[in-house]
Length: 451
Image (cartoon, rainbow, N blue to C red):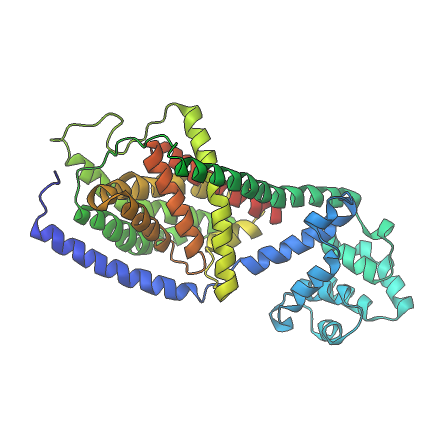
């Protein structure tokens, strides 16, 4: 039986839900104006492909870089208006273009950095001047940290591959490319096989029966207060706004990108406090109920091996479905933007401490907190009240909505469905945390490889 629901609790839940819907609507609308990280990721992928090509075996080139990585990078750059490009990107484009309006305009636009201006001047020159520009290329300090710019400028100025291609860099980029593309491809293939196997077992009615559902003896109004009131209203709006001034003072003398990473870390901790305090109070009110085996949230850490196996299998099976949903979304409506700003921060950061803070936030804290709320508390109550099927679907939709991104909504729904099914089929919360952590960890690693 559920606890009695007072009129005051119902009113507070209704008000919280109304505010949450307004916040979600505003957040989803604003996500259209947030830039997408997808074009930058695609561009980085093309740059790495070009650098990796000399070191890749001929048998792997068609799979990882295609026939002409130079043309693919040039075509990717052509899609960006020249006035929106960074100076470095315009120089790369001018180096890849042999003739044409794009090259002329890219070489005419003013460049602030002196080293980039020197490369631009060399690319403008006659063949004799270009050769002199080639001999001066090694004197430019900026090229020590930008092997792509050095390679394309060197080749454009008449250098040979023996001179322009750094074999050590090429081998390093080849390894990055194989990992960043090979892991997702392998996961999609393995996951597809596991999905087919799962469907076959389902058709033969050979799947193991799911364990009995253990649900918190709370009402839907309690879940509204937890998710809408605690997670959305207090967690996503009020507490971060309250903490932001203190965070700015604390990080005032810290340089970027560590400053931004520390603010993200502090902001996320602040966001988790209200729902965790509400959930703690709700659990405290269950003292009159008999505590089930494994506790109300069913963490069940042991056996560890089984938890890791189920988490890995769940991650593999969700990969092809997430890929398919993203492909359908992009095919139908294109890239809607609204990427999580944290992705851009990881992609552009090279500070070890900054990356460590982001890693702890995304791979440890986020899975623990989100699984506790969505699969630990919300899903079992929904499934107990309205049936498992509806509980899985509704919890996945709420999970995706809470991330406030139209562009990432379909893949997040698929991920939420996979996590919910793992929670119900295993009867444990810990495998869900591991699967979520694995998902975020692979994404984080891929961003580092492309950074």
